[in-house]
Amino acid sequence: MQKNLLMEYSKRLAIELELVCKEIKGNSNAVFQIRKSSSSVFANVSEAQYPQSLKDMLSKLKIARKECFETESWLEILRSTGYINENIFKKYRNLCGRIRRMLTASCITIEKKIADSTV
Image 1: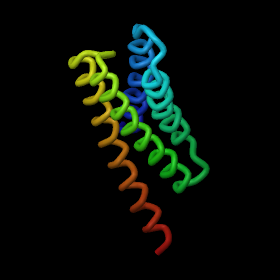
Image 2: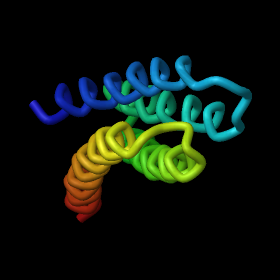
Image 3: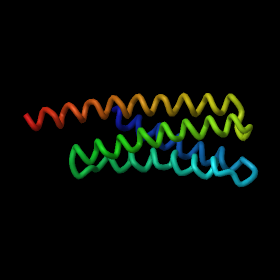
């Protein structure tokens, strides 16, 4: 169940931030970077659905978590420079936080499975 929700949230993040970025006027590096990081969250979560191994799955989810935190950082830059308002910032920062917590829980579970399998 959590995997499907994680896929749903990460897809929503990528799509909605792409649409937000399309509305931003000008050529901002932060806009380019947030497009990359938010789509990378979704791409890595997607790749983790069919891993070669538990270690591969763990690696993809950890990358997704790092990209999610990067997305939050770029949201802060966009808010601070006036490209997005406070409401948009909070909406997507909260979504990122939800995704990160799910990714962290998944990573902990997988790390336990890997540790148990080596005993």
